[in-house]
Length: 200
Image (cartoon, rainbow, N blue to C red):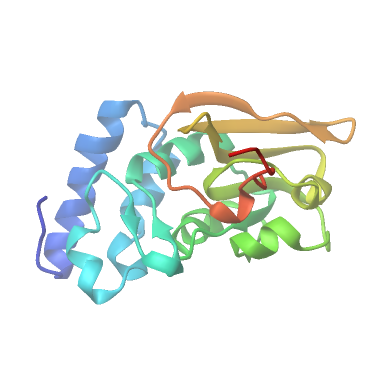
């Protein structure tokens, strides 16, 4: 694992290397996506003792506080979400605020909730776009209720122990998530399906 001192010049160089070696080579070439990933320093969303690994090509675990997912996940998620200046967005956070900061200048309005609130909170508003900073095992009715008709959702999805990028659109009150691509994505356990009782 390569680490680096935490200085503005070196971290700016690391962000550029992230764009060129992790994102462009994996098909993330939308300029608005690359511009946001270049503009937002990942290290600002990590504790000081994790800043030196901010640009590795995998997720950074933060214990009970959540995670910062790999750059490729955010690049692919932003491409699939295609946020626009008319969008009202709900971000279900992974614990750092990084995804919300990537999206904020691209949309009309942005609200964040943590994973537990995203799983359990009653609908207080409707959104044209919901993005989830992690992989979920189930999409709860609480989130479906907050998605406007024809609104879209982009998330990680845990299927048979494999995490995939997935997206869906609300049609006739229902959302079906379609898996798009296998990616390494941290799992948000607040969205786990309750395990039923079974014989030993």
